[in-house]
Image 1 (cartoon, one colour):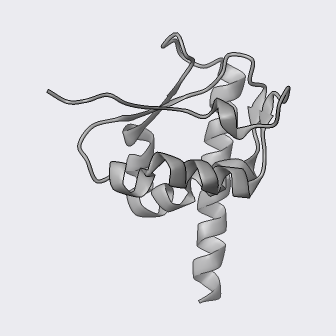
Image 2 (cartoon, helix red, strand yellow):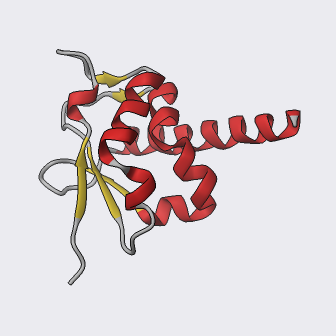
Length: 116
């Protein structure tokens, strides 16, 4: 039986904030969740986003998921699922925000590789 891997990111934003910011916060979340290890396992990974979230800054998203996007490429969107605590789908604006952040990370990876 496959275990459900669910990670709540709520504690990685400032008190009262509705936006996740800061690359260091993203990196801390990645380390706390052990995503490098968890990604090796079969199945999806669920990222639970508080319902009062307005957005996720690209720097936070990059800190949390850059390593995953580098490793998984197009499979990132199949491996990771983003949802609210009650299991419902995210609002369209937040889904778009995440898609934009994925594109941002991919562009930055491409620039870094182009410098080499």
